[in-house]
Length: 113
Image (cartoon, rainbow, N blue to C red; front, side, top):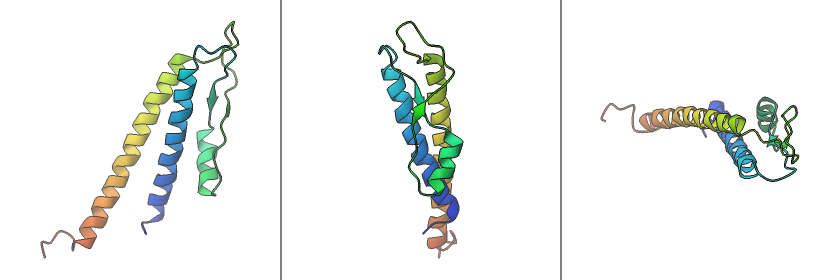
């Protein structure tokens, strides 16, 4: 259908959507005693997605544990949300650009014919 870049962009955007859900869940559980922050190893999961594998969500190591056993760092999660939104926006713009080029090719290159 579209070129391989489009397929990679689709996988990238799907992975960003999954990460958005994981980060949102972390934020929702910021006050849940014993909750451990979860995330995906984005680079390795992007490689796995290219091979048709489902992403693995795991606990984040090295975060400060609070007295209640929760280790959610809201500053970290807010940063990840902002980064994720920026990456998704850029990928969306690339997809729109590709679709616009495809549309122009179908319509005869914009020559008005």
